[in-house]
Amino acid sequence: MVWGKYFAVMLGTALKYIAGPIAGFSLGLAWYETLLASWVGFMLTVLIVVSLGKLLVQWIGSFRKSKPLVFSKRARFAVGIWQKFGIKGIAALTPLIFTPIGGSLLSLSFKVPLSRILFFMAISGFIWSSIYTLIIYQLTFLKEYLF
Image (cartoon, rainbow, N blue to C red; front, side, top):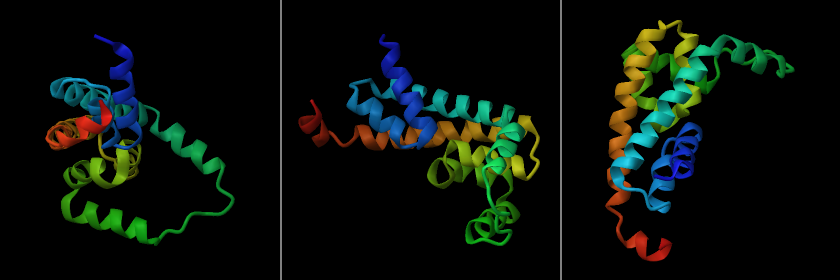
């Protein structure tokens, strides 16, 4: 067990979800190690962002020179997802579109309780971690180029 490899997968997942399974594959981890490290990295990021969310929002707001657009294209997209699907939709699209940090902040902005955020993000994270990992590990022709 090399903890550095797991940490690299978790860090990649924290920044952009698909980067974790790609890192696990390129580091030579087994598919189940990559799946679990991706999911743990995702959940740690969600937990940290949700826990420190209000402080993070205030800190980011201190760097803004002007007030953000209320009806931007991105804001309308997020509100549309919220109105149609609620926290389930945001959790499902977090690994695809919003990134773990963005999806967590978005769910906080709609004032979703912490327990619901963690529950639905955990389910979504595990499903998407499984999908991404299994798809990437099926691309066996890449092993010839990487190893």
